[in-house]
Amino acid sequence: MPSYKHISPFLSGGENKISRSLSYVGLGVGVLLLLSSIQMYININNLLQEKNSRKDGADFISVTKTITNDNMGKDNRFTQADVEEIKAQPFITDAAPLISNQFRVKASAGNIIPFSTDLFLESLDEKFLDTVPPSFTWQPGQPDVPIIFSSDFMEMYNVFAPSQDLPQLSDKTMSSVSIILECYTPTGVQNYRARIVALSDRINSVLVPNNFMQWANKNFGGVSQVNPSRIYIKTVDANNPQLLSYLEKKDYRVNKDKTKFGRVKQILQAIVSGLAGFGVLVILLAMLLFSFYLQLMISKNKDNLQLLLTLGYSPQWLSKTVAKNRVPVYIVIVLAALLFTAFLQYCFQHFVMYGREE
Image (cartoon, rainbow, N blue to C red; front, side, top):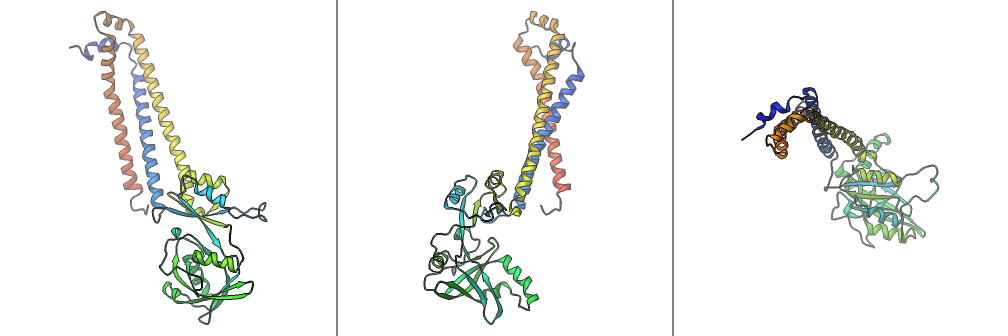
């Protein structure tokens, strides 16, 4: 049965080894760039996902409207339509408003800690809280109001306390301090005993139960419906480029520390995408060069090919035989690029990232 070695002398007369070698090198470089880009994309996603630690399998972000000199005197609170629009976005799992007090509140610790201050209170759907103890409930007529206090606020107090000759407090001590809430109403001052029942690492606020806030706003502030100044959103990934683009388009302000990895991710992904596109371009150019090489070889061996056809070799057999001779070379090039990419990944993990926190 005839094989390629029997007809190779008829096809090697016009062979240009430089063109063929350049096409092989170009193919190898292009495949290597493409595979390396894919591996870099995977590494970037893994690194940013690990750096952006999450609780409950989701990210929670505080969103406010950006205040500028132009809109400073306007109402920059969220309407119900704004909240519904945010909830409708496919990259946002849920959203809830933080309702603030519409009446004056003053807090003091009595004789235990000689300290008093005007205070703001907020309430939020319990699904968005990182800690909700069973005691975080309130009913009308109940004299005690449970409070969830921000861990950051407590740290600020402990930094501030020594300069004012006030005692620093531990987490356990803070929960045992009885706080007096003075709520100013149209008819006078209504006092409540408050106690910190939990500390929150997620919400930077002083939180009270929802039903207390609604009842107090209605009875003390004369307001039943409050447009929030701040909204908390729940999303699968705070670094989602679609989410960041939406927030920027709506001119909403978020804590940039929560989304800084998403902005880095956007830049790195653009670089990797460009590198991958360049790799694909190199592969196409290599294939084009190899096509020119084949056309040149066929053109220079036109008489020999005509002789082979005259001897009874079919065009289909000739094309299949030549292809079978070239395909193993392509396979070797792709495998070599794959092995080299694996080697680069090994070096990255064991020499660049070894011993690093990431």
